[in-house]
Length: 389
Image 1: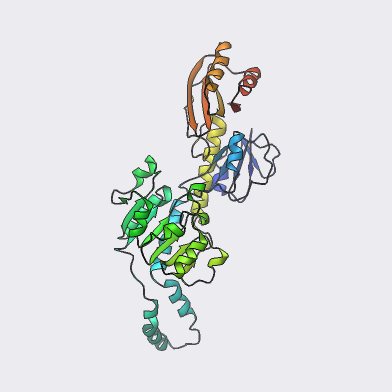
Image 2: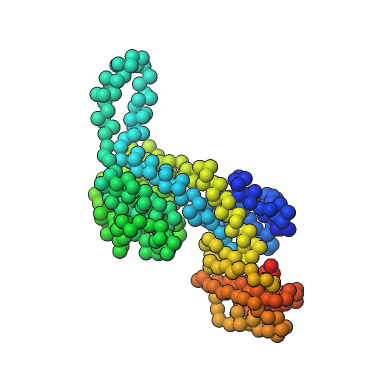
C-alpha cells in the first residue's frame, strides 16, 4: 500500500486518480512514500526518509528545496502546461486592458450613481468617452520571451488576434517547437526582440539565470513606450529598475499577475492578484497530471516532468524491477551490474539517463532481488537511493 501525504486543497479530480485498494491519502502520514502539494512551503520542514518523490500541482517549484531533495535522491515533479490555457486567457485580458482603458472606463461609469435619467447618462458618456480611448492590438508587434507550454500558446493566440509575433527562447524544447506556429519570427537574442516589440510578454521559469532578467541594462533595449507583461514570476523583473523605466517613459505600462507594495497605486501599472492559474479547469488539470506522474513513478519507476531528474521510462517486460539513482560519475552502473552477475541474475532490459550531477537507472531482472542484494546496491559508492518494484 502506497501512502501519499497531501498539502493544500488538491482537486478531487486528481485525488480520485489514486486507486484506493493500493493507495492511502492523508495529510498526517508520518512515513509517506510521496508528497502531493500546491503552494505549501517545504523549505523549513523535516521530510521523512520514507519519501521518494514530491509532486507539485503547478509549474513553479520555488516552495520546494529542490537541490537538497536531489542530494537525497527525491524526485521532484511539476505539471508544466496543465495551467497553460488559464494563463494564456488571463494574458489576453491583460493585453486588451493594457491597450485600452477598459478598467478606467468601467470605473467611471460606475461612479455616475447620481444620474437617474438615461438620456442624460448617454449624452455624458458620449462626451466623456474620448478620455478612455486606446489602440487596437491588431497590427502591433508582441515579443514572447520563453516559448514553452504557455509561451507557445500565447504566441499562437497573438497571431490569431492579428499581431506580428517575435519569439526568443535559446532553450526551446523539440515538443514546444512543434506546437509553435511557423509564422512566429524567431529572434537570435533578447535585445533584438526588445528593440522591436510594442508588447513584451515574459514566460520563463524563475531560476537563477532568469532572476532580474529585466533590469536596468535590458530596459535600455526596449522600444520607447513599450508595454511589459509579466505572467511568469515576480523575480524575473527588477522592480526598482522597472519603476525607473516607467517614470522615464521608457515603458508606458506594466501589466502583471505579481503585485508588490512598490507598485501599488501607480496609474501606469495594472496589477492582478496572482490568478493566472486560478480556474477550476487548471486546478483539475494540474492535480490529474501530478497524480498520474506520481503513480507511474511509484509503481514503475518512470519519470516524466521532473525538475531535478532526467526524463526516463521503460515498459514492463515481465520480471522484477530495480531502480536506483546515483552521482553522475563513472563505474557506478558497472558496479551494480557486477553485483547482479555475481549472483547469476539475468538482466531482461535496462535504461540509464543522466541530468547534470544525477543519474537514474531502471533495470528489469528475471528473478526477484533479495534484501541482501538491495542492501549491497545501496552500499555501492555513488549510489544515492535504490528501490525494488
